[in-house]
Image 1 (cartoon, rainbow, N blue to C red):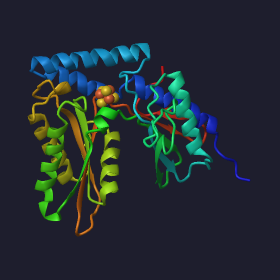
Image 2 (cartoon, rainbow, N blue to C red):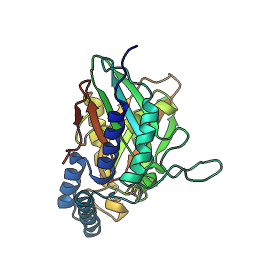
Image 3 (spheres, rainbow, N blue to C red):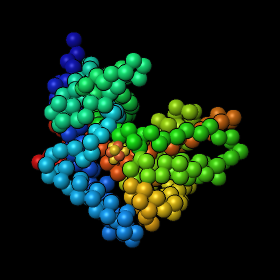
Length: 298
Ligand code: SF4
């Protein structure tokens, strides 16, 4: 019988990922927020940014969550095709979510939408939600823990545009979505946009872009330009940090990905991440070495 990989290591590492995600911003986000604080000229937004920077500093120092809403648990699991056989990864990640709920601690956020009632441990039907991908030629297992806040999630939006609306229509829908969101998603936000594919694909692609480091531009220069243009336009809305009115602090970044579309459809998914950009990623290698990509172990 083929030997299977050590699930205890995956579980323990995932609990650490959730702790990192809840208590420490990834370096790219914390640095961007500090720079934004320096750059903002409107006093109310600057004051809000000061509070945000102080808040995530205290959360990191004291190992406590940076926000009372510690999110709904989502994972991105990239399985290298040369990684040893893993059995029962879903159950392992569910155990990690339940353990982290107690150990970090994280607020229980998994509620039954039909009959009500909170499961109490951040697990439930299809929760944690796990996105799987296979990585050709890789020998590692890469896990990203992405506990997603509800306030910013509530402002995500989907449009099934007419193909003739083109890039102009896409830009308008993204800006309209931000105008509609205002201060509700706890800006400064990161905006992930998915274009094409289908309704579900556009939203999935958009959300996955929230995993990309800030400042990283799409490899296609046309899409990279669209990211820059939308970032500029979103910051011109003037909502600012926490919606208090600011000239540079509505959005930290815009990330876009596209898929080819049906001739009759132009889906656009807009996903929104608040300033508490909780994501933590690691790679586990066949020799059981663990590499944290977004955070440093003390
Ligand atoms: S949207 Fe983000 S910052 Fe606002 S309450 Fe939710 S998790 Fe916290």
